[in-house]
Length: 544
Picture 1 (cartoon, rainbow, N blue to C red):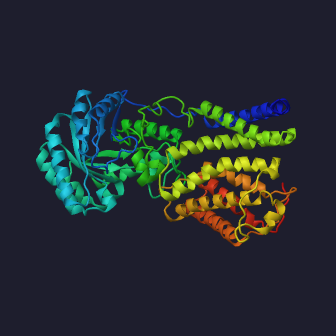
Picture 2: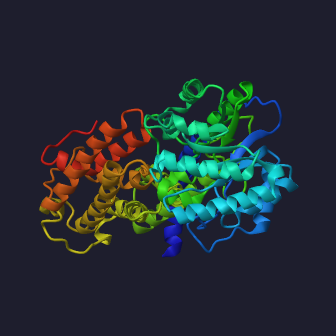
């Protein structure tokens, strides 16, 4: 029996698998193509400065028991010394004060930070530790940064912050002292400049209230620097944070990617070197802990990834998917498994039907690869993780059930759902598989709706999980096609609510994000596809 199946099915499996592999390879090769990015023009082989934090994995600055291993800091300073002249830290706590002697060992300078917040007792301890570390290693300290974005977070008023700065300034003597914040908060608190030796501003075009696309980002930086310079004449200006994320949500026209990161970092290095502006890039290494507060994008600003591999050089072309060949191979393997399963369930399926399923299986393979990568680097919150994992789990199930439905509907039966959840008309069309596909469709809609609501009420740090939901959305939209037209399906009350909620959320997201945000547009289309069962109910639409 097995021999007969292999003899009959092998040619179709091989041919359809070859087609799926070709489709996957073409798609991945296009996504992973190398793109030309202007080289950085530098006076030396080294960049000026980079923000440094030693955390990897689940380590984070909120863990009072964590202490950075000295050997890790030593290895990191040895690596960074090859590309940078200095590093910036944000606190001496958790063993980060070990950066100072390690920096001396490898010829680096350090902008030493003191983390300031609401707690006056905690601030006093932080300042004491910072002063002690600075005085013990004064020869490697380029400056002391008292507080980081304290005004932005609203944790202290400017006058109290000014008092802390003056306290440190008096203690460290000739070592320069400053405060770091987003440029708007410097312009709104001009008197703070009287307490500092130089002004440290953060200019992050991606994070602006009106995000700037990467191609216009340097013009934005130039405009901001002009405003800051004219506001504080005679004061030395340090760009304390600037950079671009390599992955995460798109904000209007500002898209994170490896190519965009290389484009911005090379351009800012070229511009600031030409104008003798000291610049600190955010950041040396990706920081996974930032995903909790800032979303996926927060953990992906590093020049190096968490394994200490350089993401891109300062010269040469850049690919958004440098490992696309491996990804294409894995996508092809998944497609082969799905095709084999589908043909195994119905060995006598026609060649045309088998070949038609090949692109769908190739898409399923690519989607699973992308989703796996996205989940590993995604923000881990209940709505995002719940909706995301639900969507990923449905991808493979949708692919299998969709294939089962077309090849042999009688092989799949699902749990019986009440009429108010799943439409009676849908059962009349496919009574043997309606309940299972209907349940999966409703679960997909619930997952997508949880993501959509997050995008409406708390959008700044949330991703658009296009890869998670594209396959189920396409599958369930295609499920509505019957004899070359949309099925006449009257949805039940629960499904009707979900469909209209998805379509309504799509409209709100479009208004909020605008047409420049291609991530948002793609997700909006998915929401509409998932809501079409109501939008087209009882209105047959010919297939074009």
